[in-house]
Length: 423
Picture 1 (cartoon, one colour):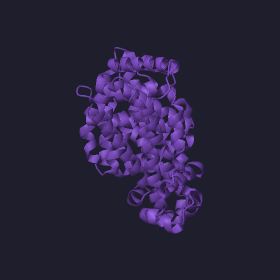
Picture 2 (picture 1 turned 180 degrees about the vertical axis):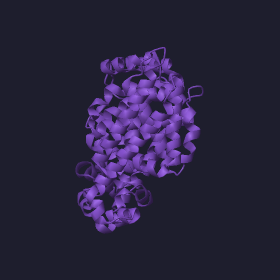
Picture 3 (picture 1 turned 90 degrees about the vertical axis):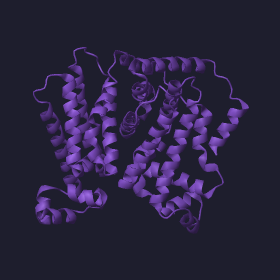
Picture 4 (picture 1 turned 180 degrees about the horizontal axis):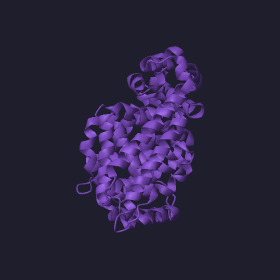
């Protein structure tokens, strides 16, 4: 399974491919597994157990909590570098394996989160790291590894283990305990014009825009598997000839729709961030706006975080490009003296994306706005320091609450900008 998936991708693999590579008969295969999916899930579980065992063995006999973490990071990254095919199946191809495979991945993440939390708890200073931050650390480390697996650069990971550990340790701060109460006191929402602008994009008299809007809505409502050129054309009101002029096939149309939809959501979040008085404040406002959008528009959220994975490797590469672009923009926007390292920015954006995705997959997108302070902390702590990050988030939260209590009508320039977004 590992070898055939590595060569062809999970979606293209057949039972015949597996039995040929294994040198067994189809009858023997079906004595052990009901089909390709069951074999794939069993392989995912086996690889997760091996990884946990490898990390546990590396820490055995070590009592210093920091050294234990260092050994764990080295063991995990070395394991991926030694067996990139197995890691690719567990961290990349699992996304194409459907809900059952994602559930296996979530359970494996839970185990690593528990191991990390236990190591943090052994520190003499007894600083508690919030559970959601621990989840973000695991998601960020996995996102960084996933990106290198996609680019065939898994051999780089052991050399990044120490910097990854330092990134993870920067979140240990007593002030982080204030993040959850900050979120509970304030759940920012988008302005009505921005939300309406996003929903109204399909009204533009442009064939390409109508096709992209139709593809996005169909995929969000019925799933990528039900997406056909005929259904897209019928909703968009364009001819077959016109569709073929615009896109080579349904996959290209869908990826373009995903990039268009995600780009619009990110652009609106960035627009909301311009109201911040400081760079940290603007970033927190942008994340607040993004989470509010996702919570208010579950159909688009499904497209951006679930359906794109139905394309297999093409979808994963597209997702990776979006995350990489966000990380680059994040670094470029930071002023001198408040800029994290390239690796920290990549890991932090991966952490935020991973937490949001887990909420969307589990139908808990409505709970994203209250956790925005923690998401902002994952981005800002490596750049500002943990204490300063919490203070900046708390200050901007207070400004946002005060601003909502005395909100003024938008200026003419602002109304013009909103109209442009709507188109």
